[in-house]
Structure formats: C-alpha cells, structure tokens
Length: 421
Length: 176
Image 1 (cartoon, chains in turn brown, yellow):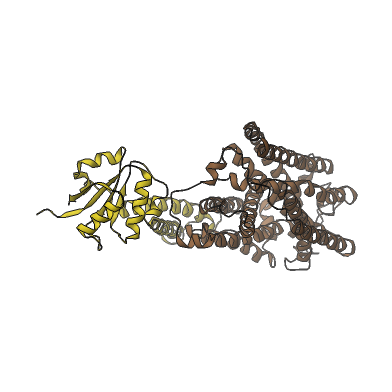
Image 2 (cartoon, chains in turn green, red):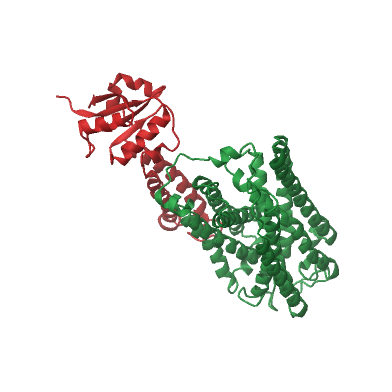
C-alpha cells in the first residue's frame, strides 16, 4: 500500500479560502466601529477549530490508553488533523498581542480602569476581581495560553512521529511509546483544555462561577472531533480510499461513540444549568439571565433541541448509526451547532447602554463566519498537506488486522450494503 | 403417534456449517435454526436473520420510564400534596428531569431484559432437540442445523435431500 495521492489542488483551495476569510476579518477589524465584536467573532473562530483539534487529540490518546482495536483505521486521519495545532497557535497570536497592546478589548478584566455597569466602580476596585487577580492577569493569561499550545503541539508531534515511524519499520516500540504518551498526555490535555475554556471564554464574564465549564468544553471538543471524523470518512469513501477498508461495523462504532457524547454533552450542560437554577445565587444566575434577553433565548432553545434532542432522537436507531449518509447529515449538523454553542458562550459579553447583550442576529455573525472560514481554511489545508505524507491507515500497527476485520456479529442488511456500494 | 419435530444434520467445521446455512436460507426456509458450541461471527447473515426486535421493547420502556418520572413528580408535588420547596414552582421539568432520566434508564433496562426473554420464549425448560443423544456434542465440537416440520416449505424427502447436498452428516428426524 502506497501513500494516497496528495490532494494538492484541494489544499490550495482551502488555503485560499482561509487567507480570504482572515483578510476580510482583518479588514473588518480595521474599519469596524465595534472592534470588540470582530475580535470576539475571531475568538469564536479560533476556539471552534481548537475544539476540533483537541477532540481529535483526545480521541487518539484515548485510543492508545485503552489499547483500542477498531479505531485503528480512523486514527491516522486524526493524526493528520493534529498538524493544524501549529497554525492555530500562530493564528492565536493576534489575540495575545491585543491583550498587551489593547487590554480590555476582548477580556474586560484586563483593563483595570474598565467601569462596571451601574456605578459599581472599576474592575480594580471589584472584590470579585481582586480575589481572582492572581489568576486573572495578563501575564498569567499569556503564559497559560503559551502553555496550552506547547502541550498540544508537543503531544501531537510525539504521537505523529511514533505512528508514522511505525509505518516504515513496524517496530512495536512505537506503540508502547504512544501508550506512555497517552498516559501523561490525557491529564495534560484535560488540564490545558479546561484552562483554555476558562481563560478564553469563561473569563469574559469573570463574575461567574461554574464548575462544569471545562467539562462542557471537553464534551464539545470530542463531539467536534468525531463529527469531523465522520466527514473525513465520507470524503475518503467518495474518493475511493476507504473502499474495502472502512466497513459498517467501524462506522457504527464511530457513530455510537458520537451518540454517547450527545448524551454526555447534554448531561454536563444540563447539570450546569440545573445546579445554577436550583441554587439560585445571583453571582451565578446572571449568566443565564442575560442569555434570556432578546433573541438569545431562542439561541438557547436551538442549542437545547438542536444540540441534544434532534441528534439524540435521530441517531437512536441502529440503522441511522450505521449508514454513512445519515451519519454525515447529523455530523454536519452537530458541527454547525457547536459553533452556535460557542457563540452563545462568547458573544453576549457585548452589551448595550443598558447592560443588556446585543442581539444574536446581527452583522457580527458575518465576522463569525469569516473567522471560521479563515481559521478553518488554514486548518483544513494543514490536514490535507499532511494527508499526502503518510499511508491512509497505519498498516503496521499491531492492531490493524483486528481493526480491518472488526465485526460485531450483527447482520449487515441490504440498506447498509447499498449505502456502501 | 409422536409428531415429527424436524430434521437435523450435523457438520464438522464452521465453514461447512456456514455454507450449509446459506443454502438452507436460499432455499427459502424460515423455521429453522443452527446450533453451535460457540458464537460464529456472521452466521446470522448467512442464516438471513433480521436484526433483533428487542430495541422496540427498550424504546417503549424508556418512554414509559420518562413519563412515569415526570407525571409522578407532578402528581406528588403539584397536584396531590402541593408543596413549595426552596422557593421553586410546584412543578418544573428542571427538578423532575434527573429522576425522569434515571427512570428512563431503569425502565429501558427492565424492558430490554423482559423483551429478550419474551422473544426467545425464555425460560424454556424443554426443547425437542434435547431428545437426540447426539446433541451433547453441540456444546462441544460439532455444529447442527435443525429444520422444523412446521416450516411451510418442509417436505421430509426434499428437506433431507437439501441437507445431504449441503454436506450434512448423521441426518435424522427428531420427535416433538
């Protein structure tokens, strides 16, 4: 088996789209009256693609730590996805620079002279800020963000090196190396993604408390990783690379995992809401109160029904979990809803004169779109560039045979055969 | 007179059984079964079996569980004995949700087990194949196909011929 033909033309298209998206976002930032809106939209775009890549990283780490079998065939594609981390870091730099050059533009607590609404003084005189000041300061923010990317890039490099080297020499030591990487990589990644969610998104409203926030972001990361995993699977099927390699049983496993995380996401997101609703403490409830203002209440409903009930009920039947088209449809839907979920968490920080959030449906969504296309174009191009450098599956992985013949002792039915023919 | 239950044929290897199952399936039989000492992957496909209907029981159980949780909490707190707890409304799906969700899981599990027993007609203390002494080996090292006399396509001579042609050994009729 040789390496697949590199999709150079496709990579260039995505790269062009990415650069165009970034250019439009930069122009919007330069000329817009509301620079904060463009910057927040860019933060959503970066966070979204970081979630996708962290999800893929976690799936690889979990694969290695539990010595999984069936997922060996899809693992290589996630490894290609990890090549985007370096670019995500580069693309995050403008946000870091803004923290030093124009503190308070994105994260209000960075500007100590920022006046709180209703004559409650400034950030510096705010007891809730003072108590958190050793954690929430620009130096910590910068150091931690550099740390997150260092962890992700370092782990990705180790995993990729071991996996690609094994293709050449078939040495089982690479598998053991990956297992060790997974053992310390999982807690490191978990900490990094939790703190990233807290610093980048949660601290936008630093008065707020929630112990579920990191887990909420984790759930979205895994869901995003799996959603893009299904899309990649579909693409490779259409290209012909996966014919005879990826079968119904592997697809069913992949989608069943995504289905499990639909429930997990709902569990943690509901828990966050329920605990705050039940305790009814003003320091916590205000976060949801501002999200019940204007059209944000409908965004909340869209997330409740679109992020949980719809994928849950749609994927409940075995048939829809084991046909590629149904899996693809919901995966694309989930990929969009995760973006809405991030918008719901980030954008209401923009307030009008009455301290109420600016509406969801506005020109700001355009900048969210250009940011997502901008950052995404670069990330997908990085994946496609990496795609041509290694074989389509890790052919010398000790588990590859088990993975290729993975079977759950269930009968393939005619509709499944049709979907795969 | 004892009624005929069906015809049994023995096979020595899994591939032989697998091939034979496909032939019996293609001949259009519906009331038949294969007996093996261990699960054979893909045999259900070779036998032309549909997927299990147990999930329908599971879904029904889950829905009943969810509705039970919601309606019971509503009945207890908002109807039968109105009680304000923690300044919350008499009824809200918020606080009813954790309990409803647990009952969904519990009732789904009950319905799944019950559905499995029902569809397999368990507990079954007697089965005609137990009468044939050779069946001891179905739990050891041999594979069997039993075609029941109740099958609409069953014909003692033709069915026997089919099993012979499929490579069956020790073909015998068994009593009800």
